[in-house]
Image (cartoon, rainbow, N blue to C red; front, side, top):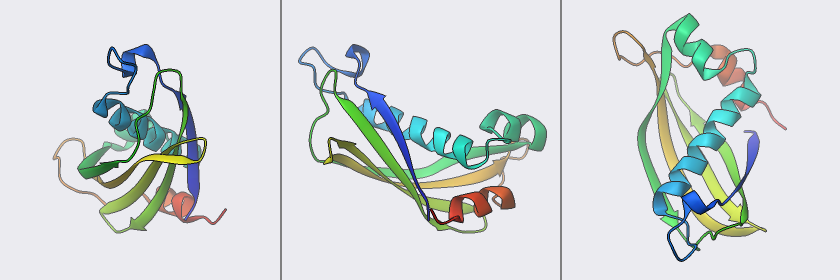
Length: 136
């Protein structure tokens, strides 16, 4: 499956008074990377359009993170995101947060698509499946 890369900078608001990134910042960077992955994969259907036009929302079912090294103020980081498995109603996403090739954290994410009105699972739209399964 394709890998998507998202670059970010560690800002003061991401860190404690010692310049070390808060644990929640990793979740924010990972969320931004997943959003940009979907935007890049299917540019004609951003998440807002999927919600407004099709009544479909993306939700996180579970997420686990393994912190390995701290990110620090002013670091330039990269979040590498790859779909690991796509099923009918859910998908597994692997993410790595790196700085200059050094692994800072890795995440395992399970996501699903749900109907906005009923909050029940819906099949992942085929255009997303095709775009995310494409080989590089």
